[in-house]
Image (cartoon, rainbow, N blue to C red):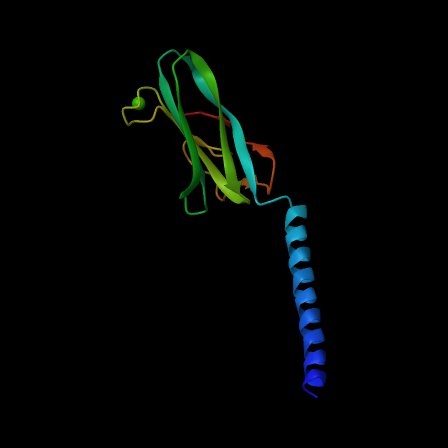
Length: 144
Ligand SMILES: [Ca+2]
């Protein structure tokens, strides 16, 4: 009597659990197949003349309102007219890539530019697509 009513209920619960587990596994596996959601954004900053002084560079991955979502910076103490940058763990999306070079790190920026921009101005809309995995290259040549 009590066993009769319990048995179908027990089977149903088992099936429900199995179904939930199956759905959870499919969801997890699909997530793995998509390859994650983050990539490395890298590239070269090209300066007009060879710079002989120590300089500091900054690169920002910016959203559509120009707010940084990821960044890197570094100091270069040798004569150089280019520097490589790399920013890991950037969430999939479309961004601006904004870079500046400051020869003396005194505030005023000697060079500034955006990937795909004109002089110091950004492009009209975010133009740098970070994929869900791997590395994507955005080079910036300073014209200012
Ligand atoms: Ca400066």
